[in-house]
Length: 408
Image (cartoon, rainbow, N blue to C red; front, side, top):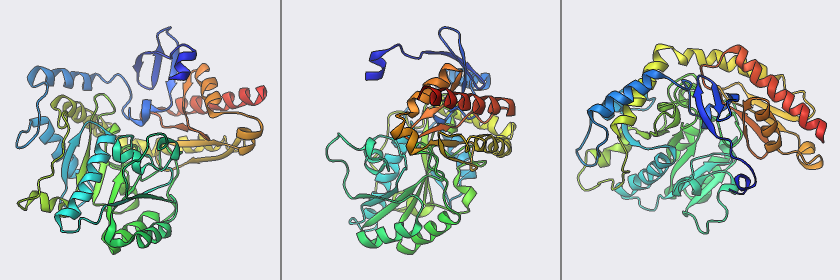
């Protein structure tokens, strides 16, 4: 708020493909797919037409109790057909933050339904981003998002993002009989694009199974072809208990999210009396949002963006790695998914006083939008980006680094 108060806002007026225009008519390459979500690119008429048709038929209606609607049912079945979990069920929400809260509450409720109400502890990873709702703020792996709010939800802890052994040690420290679930992104996104070590998720899945801990995958950023498959976690060959999704399911055209739940976790609520899951959101299963998602999935499949994204991933990785030798760059992290991070050196950040916000502003002045976090610049363009556009993105970022370095 303070930043906006000091100067003019950057007002986005329209968008098409990978491009944005401000209200002055200047064009920018959307190097972040807005907030990681516009996987199929901006301005897709098919999605707009699907939304218009649905609004003329059934604009919105609740799915509480036994109420349903055709788009919500179709979307749930379609997602379940591709989910890498056993006997999947779908809970729809309005976004990622709501979905994380849903998964966390469901994990605790599951153990209570099984007569183990003491299993409430939730474990997450450093750098992990899980939205900013109640449970999401409480398990987020970045301290700056947790401070200033007083006491958050208790019985949570964070372990190093790259150590399965640390997860096992934490489960033993807390006591396996007290741990409800472990939350992890396939690739840490907003926390800085950290790739999992080789074999990490295989070992994590083994540990969770050994101690009976529910394994919850946060695929909000990584799903819907950003990692070349439906939910991102398939890349690592494991089957979690729950998958949280949002963003790319509708490419952001309308707010939508959800949780895929395996049959084991669903069983006490679905097949037994006396265990209602008293949780829901007003716009869960919103028929118009589901219609947008269905049209978006049609595009993903018709244009085979699952395969295309693997090719984009390779070219983006190659281009970004060219920045590794820049004097201001400490590390480039890329190569798993259409996403990457260019981290600045400690010398640049401390001794020179350079900020990632300054590099971000310089890049935007030159016509490319990236995302600044405290130590790095993040990129996650639409999956429809071309090789030429990738080269433009990276060369512009290089020019921004050069310009900032010259000023310091």
